[in-house]
Structures are given as structure tokens and as C-alpha cells.
Length: 247
Image (cartoon, rainbow, N blue to C red; front, side):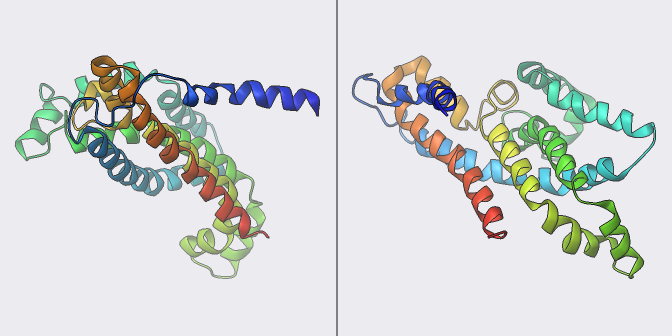
């Protein structure tokens, strides 16, 4: 018990920094509307990115959890590459592959879809940065559900989508909630890749860096508080809602 208490204190000790004296806080860091704008950009665009991650990543996680054979190793390796990719390297590669100078980026730009310094670039970068984490965690959650239950439901004539909705999802929801939480925090807090592909519109991580460079810690603290309140409670709430279903 004492060891766990000591570990917890050490783990949470950085939060003491929230009470450090850094001078009088500055809400916008010298740029009117920057804080509110960064919060709006992060919340709205990260929500869009999460919808894409869940819709695209859940079938992949289910396939990896239920497939057998050597080909699964290939698909696992592809997913892990996205997880292990350093953020800055990911941003540079995305800017090269989707930038206006590339054939695909040039085509998208001609049809009115800018792939750098745009909401599209912001969302796409967050999807690339977080979907691997979601798939890995969601796969583990789905794999924990006995496959025999799904097979039994299928033998009774239940459609595959209905099997997932009525059998797999209820049993895996705690793990899926954890997967969504991990992906949310990963996407919301992404800095290295986003600052390369989508410096504008600035989300909270980029704006925190800009405020730090231009006005110092007094301009960082208000946005840092909002950033933490946005990143932390939502995953907690997802877990609480999922666990309350078991109560």
C-alpha cells in the first residue's frame, strides 16, 4: 500500500506545476481570440477525426481479432508502423505525400481540397496519428469476446452487423471505450505531426507552443488548463458510462 501511494504521488507530482507562480496570466497571448479559436478548432476537428477513426478502424480491428493465417501478420505489421512512427517523421511524410507538390495533393487542391494548413489537413493528420492506437486497443477488446458466442448467433440467422451490435459490442464495450479514450487523447494532443501539416488552423497544442514562444508562461497557463480539462475528463466519462452499464 505504501509503495503504491509513493508511486502515485510521484506519478501525479507534475500536476503541482499548475500552481506555480508564473506571473499574471494572459488569456490570448497578445493575439485576440487565439485561445477561444484554438479550443474550437481542437474540439470540433478532433471530434470529426474520431468519427473517422471509429468508422474506419472498428472493422479493421474486428478483422484482425477474428482472422487467422499468415496474412494477418502483414496487416498487423502495417498497423504497428503507424503506431511506431515518430510524430515529426509522420508530419513530414504526410506533407510530402499529400502536399501541393505531390500528384495526389495537387489533384485534391485543384478540386478544392487543400491538404496543408487547412481543416482537412488537420483532421487527416489526427486520423493518421491516432487510428493505429485505436485499432490495437479495439482489437484486444474484440478478441476478448468468445468467438463461439458470435458463431452461435450467426448459426441462429443473425446478420453479421447485428451480431456485432448485439453480441460483440456489449461484451467488448469497456475495451472499446478504452480504445476511444486512447485515440482521443492521442489525436487531441498531437503536436509534432500537426505543426508540420496544419500550422493553421491552430489547435490547442500548436497554440500553446505559439503562446510560449511569443508571450511566455503567463500566456500558456490558461490554455493549458483548458487543454487538460478537455483531454482528461472525456476519457474518464466514457469509462464511467461504460462501467455503469455493468453495475
